[in-house]
Amino acid sequence: MSILIMGNPKAFLNIHRQEAGYRPVHDRIHDFGEVEQTLNTSERKLQASRCMDCGVPFCHWACPLGNKPPEWNDALYRGEWELAYHLLEVTNPFPEFTGRICPALCEKACVLNLVEHEPTTNREDECAITEAAFREGYVKVRVPERNGKRVAVIGAGPAGLAAANDLNQMGYAVTVFEKCEAAGGLLRYGIPNFKLNKAIIDRRLKVLEAEGVEFRYGVEIDINSQFLTLNTDYDAVVIATGTPVARDLNVPGRQLKGVHLALELLAQQNRVLAGMEFDDDERVTAKGKDVLVIGGGDTGSDCIGTAHRQGCKSVTQIEIMPRPVEGPCDLQNPWPNYPRTLKTTSSHEEGCTRRWNINTLEFLGEDGKLTGVRVQEIDWQPNPAGGRPLMVPKGEPEVIKAELVLLAMGFLKPEHPQYADNVFVCGDSANGASLVVRAIASGRQTARKVDEFLK
Image (tube, rainbow, N blue to C red):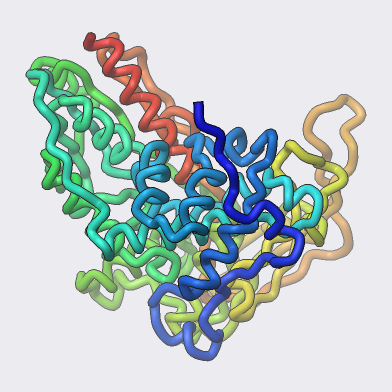
């Protein structure tokens, strides 16, 4: 039995957390290139050395994939980049995705975060390791021996790709059916290019295809009419269709031109960057407009960044929930729960009026076009009967000027019928909208369930 000894067990005492940071605002808002910068090799090794090989590494426990940051951080510190990547890929099939867009649950659980509020830069280290692996040729195509059985995967988002990858490596002949023109799901059509360049997705898809995964694009599977055929042609079916229905806001004026679901903007913009063209009446654009984003999560933030790059006049973001606490600690939601602290993204830094405890009452317009939104400031009070707090109006309603409203209020969890025993559901389609890292973990878990069933 070998014992891991960190190369510099005292580094965390004299080396502070250093993030790569973002490109300057005046530079990045004029293009859709990735906003995050990178540290040089020497600085990256120093950051990896800060991992102190805790006796109880909570980062393992917090990561849905079970990543092992102490092991690959130590390899990175020692300059063993290939070893670092192989340690990383054991638990994570797509570290180039999570290294860019994961909220880094491991860092929230890092002992250095709990004590000093300066966690190890696991996410950035993960991304740096993976980029080095692709650059240096450490990512190898592995074509497994086939076992004679076939599996269909419906949906090529992160969960579907993870399930397809693992099942393929187990020896199954995997066919992925995707209704869109390319794979990636929300990675491609929901997350802006300034957070995840789509060439990163295409690079991984080439590896999966070389390893034997078959992709069929532009194929939308109707579960009611086509499922029997799939069950006949394949030994098992994995449903990874995500959460396609966004939460809408049915208030007066919803039909006005200028009110859109967030993904109508985000998906279209990503398609435009991929070379697709849209007529003027189809185009959803913030150019020259006052924009209101309803919803305070990551999707709302992505809308803000996209609006700036399209040339908006102004952006306001409203959220019906109270303002989160500032600072690293949330006394109302202590560890090990995820901290509900104020999150300021790169998009917020580019300019945005943010307001909380705001309820939307009505969309206002002239000649069928949106001109503003009537809103109401509210308070949340304890419910005497228990359960959800009560929303109480506060002050007088007001009007926020807007020619474009983007609804970014999350997605509805799909409902599924009772399927045959050889049908498995994974990712957001099974659990409701969540993180990419959780979708990947669910895809991997489902692949193991399929394997156990077919054996």
